[in-house]
Length: 534
Image 1: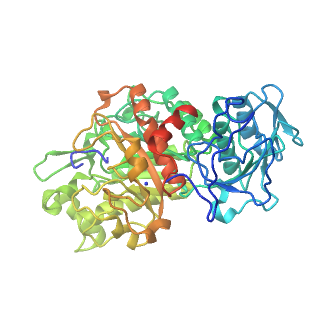
Image 2: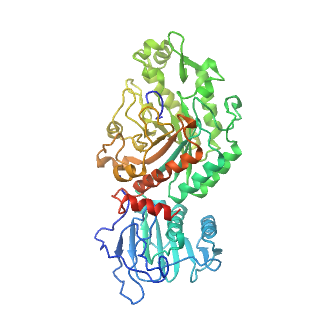
Image 3: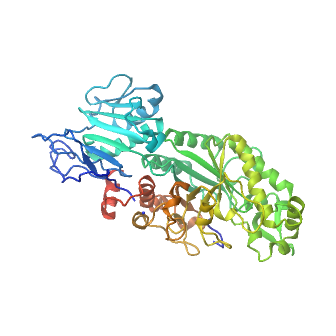
């Protein structure tokens, strides 16, 4: 946790842009209503735009997250013409994105063909329009001109994000404004993590979250599915540890497929060597015991080869089930290291450390070696390992492998290290700041349910620990952030209450991950927009 007994910015201006007065759209946003054109990011006037009697200069589309750049133009914009307009593709690889958008907007799918009036064209960029150095595969350009829409990007992910912008821009009968959107995320990892181990969430709930995350341009879904309370995914290698309420492998495959269709990577986590109570209940011989013979809650005895064997068998078994690039290894809250004198309290660990690392070997070395060994297990399957910051143990001579990403969640653990210590060492870090991004059911310890407003107004990816940001010089090492739900007191909220409680925090978090600048909208206007672009 992140969870045991020890337990800020979005709208965009183009540099040098002219901020224009709000114009009115005959036949535009809310046709005939005389309402102001949609706004969300900030717009720049196109040098070639010339006044006409018919159309005011457009405003940026109203979306969450807000688009980062919009070049304004004059024209009628675009609105889906149900049953008549089409979604066409310039490349067959975009058929899935096109069919999804066509279904959402009640348009026809036109396959690979030239666009006509009223159509949307999706295409992989081949005309130099996209500056890939600015956003890579997730960047896109959305052009509304001549009563048609063109979405182009270097890769399918960018095209998908362009379709999410268009979907929101026309929601509620709106019109997508004339002009050009050039958009890209500030951070490459934009995640939501759910603890399904201590609280069972049904498949439909998880699928609904995937759809929500996709529309918000998140690209990771973390599944913490093993803990002291339960093990929640079907296992062939160790069926004895699986809880009665669990997901079958076929259900997981379906969830992963749905996530892939939204360009979301599912990141599994089997936390070890702590938080393995579901395993040790069925394998009590692996329980960690102190010098007095007392069991240490949730921990396996890492001096026993059998403990590593069972965890590695599970890691290998699920490698096929989760084909994404990342694996979260946990490694936090190994309670042996919270003892005042780990060597005296756990002599068997001390002896194993000396045997492996020489006379100076300590329990910290043995724990770090465990983390490195688990990373060695998942790397051959193409996985990039992650671990919680309190799994990078201080006090030994052994160092965690350089490629293990730091999932920084707290500074409250014993022997806590400031984020700067990891960043100065050159490590890459993902922000899980428990001050802002932790939704802990029942609010135990000092946890409080986060509010979207606090995230929106005060947090940025640089605020890694507490409320103080790290230096901007580390910005490139902070790969993104993840909003996390933990089931400490599982019955404190229903699934529906959790979904409602995280709704605005999720939107605020992604706004700050997509664009680090101060949001253009006031919080009350952001909330209103969230209700309008459901």
